[in-house]
Image (cartoon, rainbow, N blue to C red; front, side, top):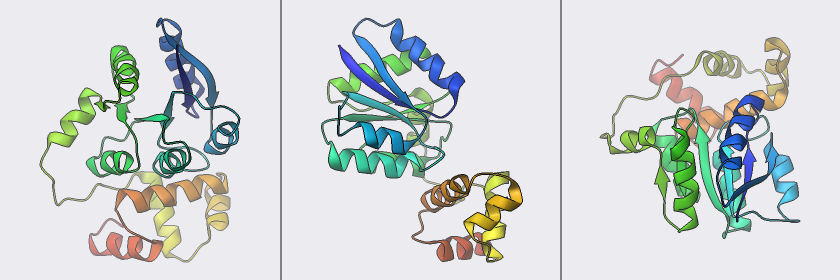
Length: 204
Protein backbone atom coordinates (compact mmCIF):
# COMPACT_ATOMS: atom_id res chain seq x y z
CA UNK A 1 0.00 0.00 0.00
CA UNK A 2 1.46 3.35 -1.07
CA UNK A 3 0.92 5.93 1.66
CA UNK A 4 0.37 9.48 0.45
CA UNK A 5 0.29 12.85 2.20
CA UNK A 6 -1.43 15.74 0.40
CA UNK A 7 -0.50 19.39 1.02
CA UNK A 8 -3.13 21.66 -0.57
CA UNK A 9 -4.97 24.66 0.85
CA UNK A 10 -8.05 24.55 -1.38
CA UNK A 11 -10.67 22.19 0.14
CA UNK A 12 -12.34 21.35 -3.18
CA UNK A 13 -9.02 20.36 -4.75
CA UNK A 14 -8.12 18.35 -1.65
CA UNK A 15 -11.37 16.41 -1.69
CA UNK A 16 -11.14 15.78 -5.42
CA UNK A 17 -7.63 14.37 -5.27
CA UNK A 18 -8.38 12.26 -2.19
CA UNK A 19 -11.38 10.81 -4.04
CA UNK A 20 -9.11 9.77 -6.92
CA UNK A 21 -6.73 7.95 -4.57
CA UNK A 22 -9.62 6.34 -2.66
CA UNK A 23 -10.72 4.61 -5.86
CA UNK A 24 -7.24 3.22 -6.57
CA UNK A 25 -6.18 -0.12 -5.19
CA UNK A 26 -2.87 0.13 -3.40
CA UNK A 27 -3.05 3.89 -2.73
CA UNK A 28 -4.05 5.52 0.52
CA UNK A 29 -4.06 9.26 1.23
CA UNK A 30 -3.72 9.06 4.99
CA UNK A 31 -3.32 12.76 5.81
CA UNK A 32 -3.94 16.11 4.15
CA UNK A 33 -2.55 19.47 5.26
CA UNK A 34 -3.42 23.01 4.21
CA UNK A 35 -0.01 24.47 5.07
CA UNK A 36 3.65 23.55 5.23
CA UNK A 37 4.05 23.99 8.98
CA UNK A 38 1.62 21.21 9.86
CA UNK A 39 3.27 18.86 7.37
CA UNK A 40 6.71 19.46 8.87
CA UNK A 41 5.30 18.88 12.36
CA UNK A 42 3.90 15.50 11.30
CA UNK A 43 6.94 14.12 9.46
CA UNK A 44 9.14 13.45 12.52
CA UNK A 45 6.33 11.24 13.83
CA UNK A 46 5.53 9.39 10.61
CA UNK A 47 6.72 9.57 7.01
CA UNK A 48 4.66 8.58 3.96
CA UNK A 49 5.95 7.12 0.72
CA UNK A 50 4.87 10.13 -1.34
CA UNK A 51 3.96 13.75 -0.67
CA UNK A 52 1.85 15.58 -3.24
CA UNK A 53 2.26 19.29 -2.55
CA UNK A 54 0.88 22.49 -3.98
CA UNK A 55 3.50 25.12 -4.82
CA UNK A 56 1.48 28.07 -3.52
CA UNK A 57 0.69 27.65 0.17
CA UNK A 58 -0.42 30.20 2.75
CA UNK A 59 2.75 30.02 4.86
CA UNK A 60 5.45 29.01 2.37
CA UNK A 61 6.02 27.91 -1.22
CA UNK A 62 6.39 24.36 -2.43
CA UNK A 63 9.86 24.98 -3.84
CA UNK A 64 11.30 25.75 -0.39
CA UNK A 65 9.14 23.14 1.31
CA UNK A 66 10.29 20.44 -1.10
CA UNK A 67 13.95 21.17 -0.33
CA UNK A 68 13.32 21.00 3.43
CA UNK A 69 11.50 17.68 3.10
CA UNK A 70 14.10 16.13 0.81
CA UNK A 71 17.02 17.34 2.94
CA UNK A 72 15.52 15.78 6.07
CA UNK A 73 13.71 12.78 4.56
CA UNK A 74 15.40 11.87 1.25
CA UNK A 75 13.46 8.61 0.88
CA UNK A 76 10.12 10.44 0.53
CA UNK A 77 9.11 11.09 -3.07
CA UNK A 78 7.69 14.57 -3.69
CA UNK A 79 5.28 15.43 -6.49
CA UNK A 80 4.50 19.08 -7.20
CA UNK A 81 0.89 20.05 -7.81
CA UNK A 82 0.36 23.47 -9.34
CA UNK A 83 -1.47 25.76 -11.73
CA UNK A 84 1.94 27.25 -12.58
CA UNK A 85 3.24 25.98 -15.90
CA UNK A 86 6.40 28.08 -16.17
CA UNK A 87 9.61 26.28 -17.10
CA UNK A 88 11.70 28.08 -14.46
CA UNK A 89 9.36 27.01 -11.67
CA UNK A 90 9.22 23.40 -12.86
CA UNK A 91 13.01 23.25 -13.06
CA UNK A 92 13.45 24.78 -9.59
CA UNK A 93 11.06 22.26 -8.10
CA UNK A 94 12.94 19.40 -9.71
CA UNK A 95 16.30 20.87 -8.69
CA UNK A 96 15.06 20.84 -5.09
CA UNK A 97 14.36 17.13 -5.24
CA UNK A 98 10.85 16.69 -6.62
CA UNK A 99 10.25 13.49 -8.56
CA UNK A 100 7.24 14.76 -10.48
CA UNK A 101 5.28 17.83 -11.55
CA UNK A 102 1.53 17.73 -12.15
CA UNK A 103 -0.58 20.59 -13.44
CA UNK A 104 -3.96 20.98 -11.76
CA UNK A 105 -5.64 20.62 -15.15
CA UNK A 106 -4.13 17.14 -15.52
CA UNK A 107 -6.35 14.16 -16.20
CA UNK A 108 -7.12 11.86 -13.27
CA UNK A 109 -4.99 9.07 -14.72
CA UNK A 110 -1.94 11.37 -14.79
CA UNK A 111 -2.03 11.82 -11.02
CA UNK A 112 -2.31 8.07 -10.52
CA UNK A 113 0.44 7.41 -13.06
CA UNK A 114 2.65 9.93 -11.28
CA UNK A 115 2.35 8.04 -7.99
CA UNK A 116 3.17 4.75 -9.70
CA UNK A 117 6.16 6.28 -11.50
CA UNK A 118 7.79 7.85 -8.46
CA UNK A 119 7.33 4.63 -6.49
CA UNK A 120 9.51 3.02 -9.16
CA UNK A 121 12.07 5.81 -8.65
CA UNK A 122 11.16 7.40 -11.97
CA UNK A 123 10.29 11.01 -12.69
CA UNK A 124 6.88 12.03 -14.03
CA UNK A 125 5.53 15.17 -15.67
CA UNK A 126 1.93 15.74 -16.62
CA UNK A 127 1.41 16.30 -20.34
CA UNK A 128 1.20 20.10 -20.03
CA UNK A 129 4.35 20.31 -17.90
CA UNK A 130 6.22 17.97 -20.23
CA UNK A 131 5.30 20.12 -23.24
CA UNK A 132 6.53 23.23 -21.41
CA UNK A 133 9.89 21.64 -20.68
CA UNK A 134 10.31 20.75 -24.36
CA UNK A 135 9.91 24.35 -25.47
CA UNK A 136 13.11 26.30 -26.16
CA UNK A 137 14.08 28.83 -23.50
CA UNK A 138 12.68 32.25 -24.20
CA UNK A 139 14.18 35.53 -23.20
CA UNK A 140 10.80 36.98 -22.37
CA UNK A 141 10.18 37.02 -18.65
CA UNK A 142 6.92 35.71 -17.20
CA UNK A 143 4.38 38.42 -16.47
CA UNK A 144 3.39 39.43 -12.97
CA UNK A 145 -0.11 38.48 -11.89
CA UNK A 146 -2.39 41.31 -10.81
CA UNK A 147 -1.81 40.50 -7.14
CA UNK A 148 1.96 40.12 -7.58
CA UNK A 149 2.16 43.51 -9.31
CA UNK A 150 0.06 45.13 -6.58
CA UNK A 151 2.32 43.73 -3.86
CA UNK A 152 5.58 44.47 -5.68
CA UNK A 153 4.60 48.10 -6.24
CA UNK A 154 3.96 48.48 -2.53
CA UNK A 155 7.27 46.77 -1.71
CA UNK A 156 8.99 49.23 -4.06
CA UNK A 157 7.32 52.05 -2.11
CA UNK A 158 9.10 50.77 1.00
CA UNK A 159 6.13 49.18 2.76
CA UNK A 160 6.64 46.19 5.05
CA UNK A 161 4.81 42.89 4.61
CA UNK A 162 2.52 43.77 7.51
CA UNK A 163 1.69 47.20 6.09
CA UNK A 164 0.92 45.67 2.69
CA UNK A 165 -1.24 42.97 4.28
CA UNK A 166 -3.23 45.63 6.16
CA UNK A 167 -3.76 47.66 2.98
CA UNK A 168 -4.98 44.80 0.78
CA UNK A 169 -6.82 42.94 3.56
CA UNK A 170 -4.91 39.65 3.54
CA UNK A 171 -2.84 37.78 6.10
CA UNK A 172 0.81 38.81 6.34
CA UNK A 173 1.85 35.23 5.52
CA UNK A 174 0.11 35.60 2.14
CA UNK A 175 2.20 38.66 1.31
CA UNK A 176 5.36 36.85 2.44
CA UNK A 177 4.47 33.86 0.27
CA UNK A 178 3.92 36.07 -2.79
CA UNK A 179 7.28 37.75 -2.18
CA UNK A 180 9.07 34.38 -2.00
CA UNK A 181 7.25 33.11 -5.08
CA UNK A 182 8.31 36.17 -7.07
CA UNK A 183 11.96 35.67 -6.07
CA UNK A 184 11.76 32.09 -7.33
CA UNK A 185 9.78 33.05 -10.42
CA UNK A 186 12.43 35.53 -11.59
CA UNK A 187 15.43 33.64 -10.20
CA UNK A 188 16.74 36.52 -8.07
CA UNK A 189 18.33 36.39 -4.63
CA UNK A 190 16.62 39.26 -2.83
CA UNK A 191 13.88 41.86 -3.05
CA UNK A 192 16.25 44.62 -4.24
CA UNK A 193 17.21 42.51 -7.26
CA UNK A 194 13.56 41.72 -7.90
CA UNK A 195 12.56 45.40 -7.93
CA UNK A 196 15.51 46.32 -10.15
CA UNK A 197 14.59 43.59 -12.65
CA UNK A 198 10.92 44.55 -12.61
CA UNK A 199 11.74 48.20 -13.36
CA UNK A 200 14.36 47.36 -16.02
CA UNK A 201 12.03 44.94 -17.80
CA UNK A 202 9.04 47.26 -17.38
CA UNK A 203 7.08 44.69 -15.37
CA UNK A 204 5.87 47.49 -13.10
